[in-house]
Every structure is written in C-alpha cells, then in structure tokens.
Length: 249
Image (cartoon, rainbow, N blue to C red; front, top):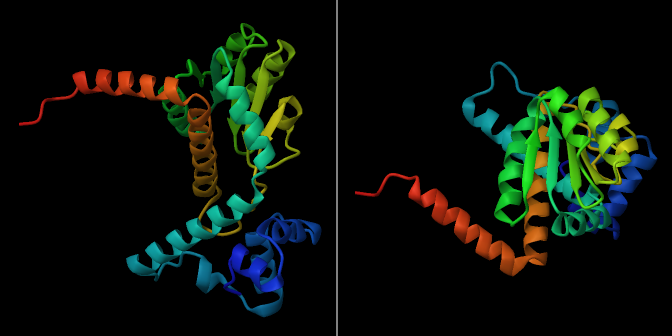
C-alpha cells in the first residue's frame, strides 16, 4: 500500500483532508496509522519495509528515514487545521510580547521559535525552567501571547504555566501532538496534527519535525502580516550578527 495521502485522495475523488477524516472515523490516529493497521492486519507484515533492522545497510537506513519523514510531513500538511494556524498568526502579529514555555526535547524547538519570532520583529522570551515558567506566567497581560510546546501534552510544569497565563488574560497557544491532551484545556488555540508514530523511526524524530513545520509556518505567516517591520528588524539583526563574525580572508 504505497499510496500517499494526496494519491489516495486523487484516486478516490476526494481531498487529503477527507482521507485524514476517514482514517480517524475508522479508529486510526491518521493516515500513517491507517496504512500500518491495514498492512499489519490485512495485507502483509511490514516490519521489513518500515522498521530499521540490524542488517540494514546505511543506504537502506537513509531511504527508510527519509521516506518516513516524507510520509509524516505529507500527512501533517493535510491534518493541520488552517483556521487555527490563521488565528495563531493573527495573535502573534499583534502581540506585545510572546513567551514560550517548553522542556526536554521540545525546548530545542522552542529555541528555534524564539530566534524566528525575534527576526519577525516580535519581542520573545523563552522559559524552560519549571519554576520560572509559572513565575513568568504571572506577569502576562491580555496583550501577550503564550506558547506551550509539549508534544505529549502532559508536561505538568508547562500545563500549570499555561493555566496561569490564561487566567491572566493572555492568548494561549498549545503546540502539541494531539487534541484532547491535558494542556489543550488551557489553550485558546490548539495546533495539533494527531499523527501516530508507530514505527522504530521514533516519536522523538516525528515530533520535532511537526514542531519545526508549524513554527516555520507561523514565522512566515507573521512576517507577511508585518512585512515592512519584519524586513527592517531582520536587517538589523543580520547586521548585528555580522559584526560578531570573523572577517573573511
């Protein structure tokens, strides 16, 4: 079963979003999970095709990893809610400041997000310390946006800080793996793809790809809204960075 989301949609005269909804209707978390269940239970065992095996050559590993990434991003593109992305971009573009809460693996993407938003002209802070997350949340106002990045949606410190920020009137955005996880209760905007990662090519790898994709979309979406300001800020940041680099020979 080698169809992609778009190929299956074209073959059935539907859309990628319809394919994703069908997969969830029949009890799967998404298209990749649907393919996995179909091939495991009906067609053939797919371990040899998708999982990394000890005897695999580096070429085979390369192909499996890249194909996994392609499949995941294609499904994520169809599953991500455009309306929620639009709302998130609008909130970020008009925010007085943006504060990001994250821990563990998601903290690496939070650092990327901070740099990205600063380049768009937004004042952005990052809190990865458990105590500081809650303390920082106490100082936000209705003019601020708070982003909680937690793929599991169950990181207690981030959840608590999101709840405090929401009570203080800030617009809260959850960048999370799945809807219905605890952090979503305290999010005004939920950015989730609801994609299952059933293979050895790891939940960690997939979650970072999803987070990176969403953050890239948000950065460009905000830049398009604040284009002139973003261009000016990006130039100043670039000039400042250039001063700190060694001169070329």
